[in-house]
Length: 155
Image 1 (cartoon, one colour):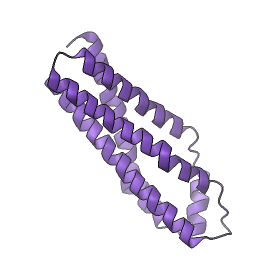
Image 2 (cartoon, helix red, strand yellow; image 1 turned 90 degrees about the vertical axis):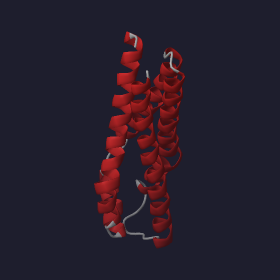
Image 3 (cartoon, helix red, strand yellow; image 1 turned 180 degrees about the horizontal axis):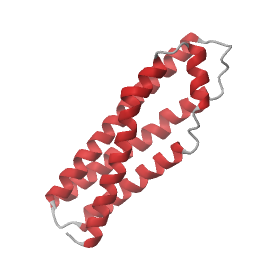
Image 4 (cartoon, helix red, strand yellow; image 1 turned 60 degrees about the vertical axis):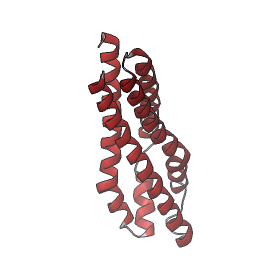
C-alpha cells in the first residue's frame, strides 16, 4: 500500500466511523428521548439544539470521505478493494443525500414551529419521516464503514 493510499484509507475509516458513531448515538439514545416528549417539550428541546454547526460538518465530512473513497478506488491495484472503496463511498453519499434531502429540511421546519400551536397530524408525520430517513442514513453509514474496512483488508 502506498503512503497516499494509506492516508486515504485512514481518512475514510475515521470519517465514516465518526459519522456512524454520531448517527448510532442519535438512534439509540437521543431520538428515543425526543420521541417520548409531548409536542411542546419536543419542539422546545429541538429548538435549543444548535445544529447550524453540526449539519455542515457532517455533510462535508461525508462528501469529502466519499470523494476520497472514489480516489482510493483508482489508487489501489486490487479490483476487490476498488469495488469496496466505491461501495463505501456510495454508503457515505446515502448518508449525505438523506441528511440534506430529508432530515435537515425537517429540522429547519421544527426550528420555526410554535410550542403553543399543536398540529398533531403534521408533527406525527414529520417525526415518522425523519425517523425513517435517520434509519436510512444510519444503515448507509454502517455499509460505508464495513466496506471501507473490507477495502483496506483487500488491498
